[in-house]
Image (cartoon, rainbow, N blue to C red; front, side, top):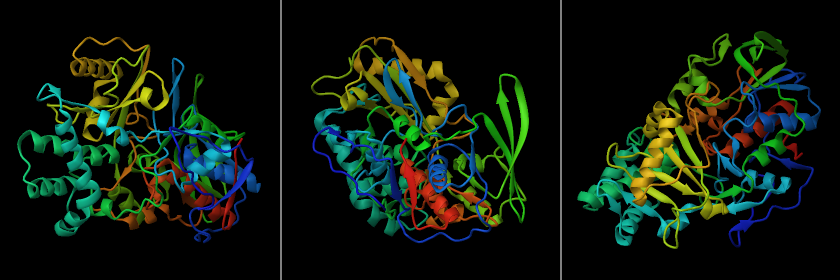
Length: 488
């Protein structure tokens, strides 16, 4: 991958001064094949990381293109909002594994500094609340639970996966570990929670359906741990990637029709004056929408239908759920010398609002972002935003033991309800294999190209994975070993 990562000396890593353009590849100098015809007019469906990156490269190469986006904004699953002066990322937050990561390279190119946001390093100051016991865990209990969670995921999972075989789930592996170590009672329940958090929370998918074997053999390519937050939020990066791109917003793509000579994209423009149908003709189309949209029966229709093998891979690969409750307060009343982030072991259901990230700890702003993933995210979404906020505040009051103030500003996400996402991000589902990710990336008839995090066999579920696949498809269209990206 062109460009080196950075190392960190202290809580804040400063971005390099901005460079107007830089060369990037997708981790390889190989030129992707499978293209038919010259890229005379390219239609890009989706203005998330993948689509914006592809558009940036095509713009710099002088290739005529148009970007269609169903939302009234750019960024896709990257979405930074202002909560009364505090920038909060409602979608992707971290640059995970930042050393050697192209997103780090781009942040340097833009001149965006990063803050160390590896909250796992703050384990000693977690406030770990056990709702069944109605108390905070002691230091010994907390560290024991976290030790078993880390020992399973990072040390013993590979050996257990080899013993249990390819049909074993994360849950199966965790039970084998707990049995092997003779854990029972509250100690077992607390250790099991830590294991579930390190799998289901990070993968946004039920841990009973997560492939243990695929997860332990995944190569994340880069290093640096949980990672960093861009100062000011991800919007500084995706706006720089978009640059002067004239994205056509509120264009809901309904169908993509392909022929021997090109493609036609059918869309509906949704505005204050009603709905209007339009069509765009081009030589090629890049489909840069989330896997959830491809899975949905109400998603994009392909005419003629996609090949059966690609449809089968779309069905096999998992697509999870995630929601966040973001709250900005007057002060960080939950924090003191011994407490920062909150880990919540609920009683019924056993996994509800499990992680509360202390934004004050990371960036000095009095805010909490509460993460909900997998089945829990489905339940949170069903409540609706107001009820989800009230329940979150009630849990915070239970944890702290006193009535808590109302937030000055708040936001509850709706990724599952959005027709342009329909969930969270890709997961290592049982029954799928890395070959399915390659199948999702394959062009159809040389005219319909695909990118997005779900088309990267290593960096799926990462914003940099989406960015890299945008580079890959631009390379395919340009028949080039690398592309030029600008930061504007």
